Amino acid sequence: MSKITILYDIEKDLQNYDNNYFHQRYPDYGRKDLDTAPWLWPSIKKRLNDTPEDEKLEIIRGYLEKRFQDKLVMKIAIKSLNEYWCTIERNYFDRLRRYMGIKKPIKNMKVFLTTLNICPYNKKENYFYTSFFASIALQTKTMMHESMHLVFLDNFEKYLVENGVNRQGVLEINEALTVLLNWEFKEFLLVPENNNKPSAKDLQEEVVAFYKQKKPFGEILDRLIELRKQIY
Image 1 (tube, rainbow, N blue to C red):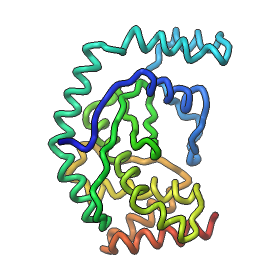
Image 2: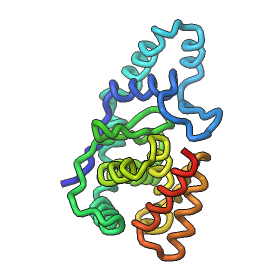
Image 3: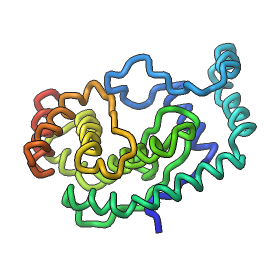
Image 4: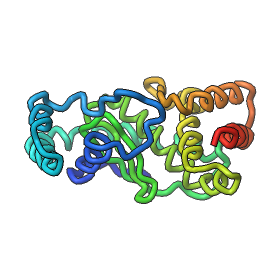
């Protein structure tokens, strides 16, 4: 049985709009002018510009209900992505646990399709997003990327905090480690991982350098801790 359940939930999609389109409630990692809704119809964007702040989400709700909720295309998208993901999930998670030295089982997660181009994770509720408009290759990469985030935090966040890393440092270390998808986990990728987070770039470069030197994961992690404690 799959560890990840793939769903579409209009409330979760709306939450993503509220947190990442109308407001910016997550760190930007130094990214500027990020368009999180490139596929939103221009007519909808115009209506939003002319609408009071407290009414914007209702416009998006109507848009999503008309075009995506309970639509056949969404059901097909979920079925297709699930069929492909199930061919790699077990091997990917087995490799992830071995590489990071994780002994406990990986927790079940949910992934929600979103009509935005930004796919954050929610550690507290153990879910993340992937974009409905992306190809299966890109959706799968996002699932590997975001599930790695959740697995890493579940197993190592306490270790980072105990070693003096602050919240922003934890987030940047978590982002930096996804560059390993292009190295240790590349056999599962159909397209390269390109995690453009400027504030974590120095850490990403260190991860690659240490990986090429065949350093174990624990040593890589301790080096990242050292670097972030120097800054924060």
